[in-house]
Length: 228
Ligand code: DC
Image (cartoon, rainbow, N blue to C red; front, side, top):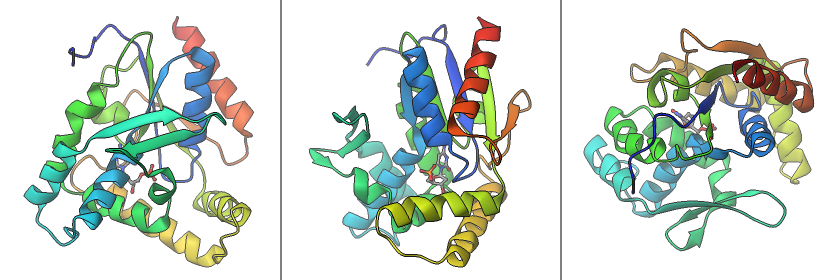
């Protein structure tokens, strides 16, 4: 693989789970015809791969080795939905489960795992540009990004969105249990010592609690245009 080109523009969209990062990042990437990096999927993949190899309780070095060895590929299906491949297997729906999210949050707290995924993430920086979504895209992975967004929404609103998403899929979970999970995950992600969830010093904060997907997307596109 050729080295990532530092001239290629990057837009980072970081924030807590349920802030709408994934949807917004996809829309912004489509509108600007840029590549997309869903970094959360990489942490979810490490969790999934470790589980499958019976290594959930393994030490940091073993899990980092799994991360370094993963054969990952992203593609898009005809409906425009992201597909994630682990080797020759399409694992997108498995990755979205709460169980995988929990595993991801645990492996993401291991410094050696974050280090193992760094090169892979930087490799997504290809012309004409990249929209990267995650927790530490603006602080650690692409500190020289042209535009950094920190997207938030109240915990209540995030739980409500997740509840609707699961309900639409016919999955029945209580709103209270989801709120608790979201708050637990936020705490773990922002209190960990390595790459904690926090806005980069030069990030623009955007609260999506009372905005539609279109409004959030347009705000980011306007900001991107101001910088052109
Ligand atoms: O965005 P997501 O829900 O798919 O992320 C899954 C987990 O991975 C989440 O608990 C935080 C972690 N993560 C991270 O630590 N750093 C990133 N850049 C992306 C995700």
